[in-house]
Image (cartoon, rainbow, N blue to C red):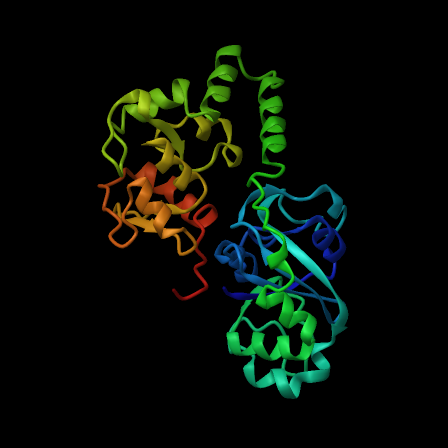
Length: 328
C-alpha cells in the first residue's frame, strides 16, 4: 500500500462522485509533467487523499491501475486546453464527515514534507502545479492522525472490509472513443474503400497491418511462438493514438501471443532500444510468471529497426506504466 495526494479544486465533485481520477498525459505544450506521470505508478489498494479548497475532504482507494481514457465530458470547460486522451484510475472515494485544513497543522506535517514533489508549501499553501504526488509514509501517518478515527478506520480497512472492492473493467470511454475514430475513418472521403477496410482491420491487429508486421517479425518476441494463428500484430503506438499511416505501418507492430499482447497493450511491459524487456513496477509478478514471463529475469528479445525504435519510444513515454520521475 502506498499513499498519494491529489489536488482536485476544479474536478473534485466530478471525480469523487464518479469514482475516478483523470489527468492528461502531458502539459498543454506537450512537455512531461511528473504530477500526471505519477498516475502510471498507482496500484490497486493504494490510498489517495483528496485535497480541495484548502481541505482534505475525502479518502479514496485505487481500484485499478492507470489506463488510457478520454477526458470526461462532465469536466466541461475545466482544463479546456488538455488533450482529449489521458490517464484514468478507478477509485472508491469516501467523503469525510469532518474535513481538515493542512495549513493549520504545518508544525506537525511540515517536518515530513518530501523534499521533491511536495504537495504543499512549508506555510501550508497548496501548489497549483500539483495534481497527483506520492506521500512518504511518515507524512501519511501524521495526516491520518490529524484526520482522526474516521480516517484511521478507513485506512485500516474497517469500513471497506465490509464490501468487496469492485475492479472495474479498464477502458471506460475508450470503446466509444475508438468507435468515434472508426467513424471518422469510414466517413473520410479522401480514403478509398480498400484503405478504410485495412485501417479498420488494423485496429484488431489483422489484415494488411499484420501482413506488413510479418515481413519484419516471425515469432512472438517473448515466447517464441511462431504459428500465425496464435499471434497478434500489436501496435507499439496504439491505434487510437496513431494517424492512418502509422496504423498500417509494419514497423509500428510486434507479433505477440494474446497474453503478451495484453501486457504490452496495457503498459505492464515494454522494450528498450536494445531489446531488453522492461517490466512495470505495478505489474503483478505472480500473474506475469503464470503467463510465461519471469519478472525477475525479463528476457532480451533481440534488436529492433530504427523505425521500430521510434514507435517503442512512444510506447515507453505514453503507455508503459512507469514514471521516469520516481525512483524504483
